[in-house]
Length: 407
Image 1 (cartoon, rainbow, N blue to C red):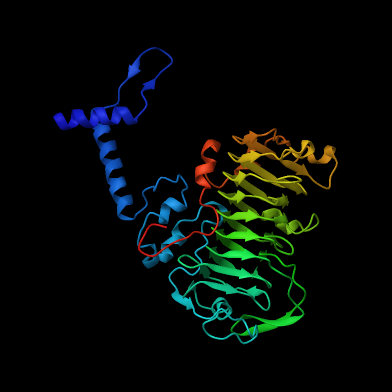
Image 2 (spheres, rainbow, N blue to C red):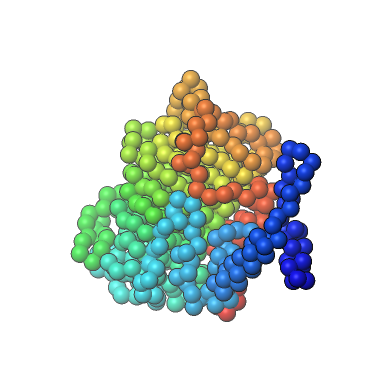
């Protein structure tokens, strides 16, 4: 009986009292209390055995895997930690671990075994890691095949100084823990895309990561800066995308989601932008959206010169619990930019701000009638309070992970 009393007291501390409109207080059934406490204890034990207990970050992706000191022996568990519209991206899960031993890229048509290019064009699922710290200067775009993870944890890997990553008409891609910067245009060259095909590539845009007709893509904990076009662009019917925990700096047109106002196939695009830090030296497009459904949640915006979130062609933008710190310039305080349309048109676009923290005069121009069905398609996870954004995004960007300790 004493144990029942102790459990009841414990549960009363964890559970709100149920109060009706009259002053009468209804107490829970003691048997139900015991069952609920046992359920919570068993669930806690189960989660602990999987290592899912929070390390105190409050970031649900990080708390899923960073607590484990043996993360390097359980690398593929990362694939179970995604959130948002790209949460089903499994990358190379259940495939072989492939170790990149050679930072070279001498032949984009016949890549050498041991190189990153050789790994990403294979047909089989692969979880790609790196033998040591590397700076990889690609000769041409790195054209990825489906079911691949590029995992830079435990090493410092830079893809920089040449063309960068292209995810075109493929699915199930995870890119994690890579420094991607100073990306250049490539093209007017033959490039291999899988073991059975290579073809002529026209001039590329020079994006850090380019999604073209891609689906189930997750870009997490990368540091991106200073590319010729966008840092991350998703166009031509790409969908089921999560862009999370990245640190973006020193760039003009940061992120384009949607090809053009006339390309209506992007109406089905769904993208989650979560837990990112948009930092120093950024100008605009964080992101710039067209047509589709976009959940912008728990990001930290500490710098922009023109605007933070923009769009055209009637996108649905659901901005929840972000932190927006406006620049000091008087005419750059607005978070939003409704582009390429008169107010009589854009006033009907569904853009909302919910729980966002506005600092230094920042303001969000909402629009639309707030159709619940539209926002349902632009909702992909529960937002944490905006007051927690600083701690949630504190580790944004590539991490300094060391084997044998929590990352």
